Image (tube, rainbow, N blue to C red):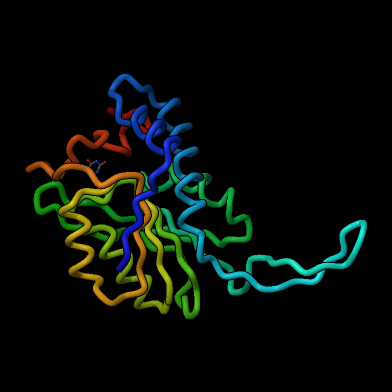
Amino acid sequence: MRIHVVDHPLVAHKLTTLRDERTDSPTFRRLADELVTLLAYEATRDVRTEQVDISTPVAGTTGVRLSHPRPLVVPILRAGLGMLEGLVRLLPTAEVGFLGMIRDEETLEAKTYATRMPEDLSGRQVYVLDPMLATGGTLIAAIDLLIERGADDVTAVVLLASPEGVEAMELALAGKPVTVVTAAVDDHLNEQGYIVPGLGDAGDRLYGTA
Ligand code: URA
């Protein structure tokens, strides 16, 4: 597993406003969307392409286009939905699947309650979206499922990560074809499972249920 922390002033600027408790839901949604697009630019650095011959108004030339099979983008419900548009904006040919996972607030373990994606992901590149890599439980369960279905290249795009979550993923997914792309790795995870300093509950802040 590889981790890539995107070091860019625009990423840091948007993340700071997302963290700020005074930022309201509409602004949070817009900034999360913009931040995902910046992260997606880095996350898709190795997206597969194929050569294509085209003609400009002036001459024939060769270029590239996104290749088949199409990449699959999988937001983890509910908070990952707030990241979907930001990613598919850069990958317009992508197919979208859905994974419903919920964290048991007592055991902090991830449970799958809905799966809507192709059974066979052989040879597919998959981008899995979840704003917060906290304990790592949800993402590890999601990525295990994707790899079991045959995905041979999985990139997790997260807004924020905890060092504990990164370590758990490195242990669970060692040697697997997995990359994590994030705007920052924060200080620690608290006893309630929140990333510190973090940004609070990403789902609540996206959907105004705080
Ligand atoms: N999920 C969140 O929404 N926030 C955290 O800090 C941790 C998990």
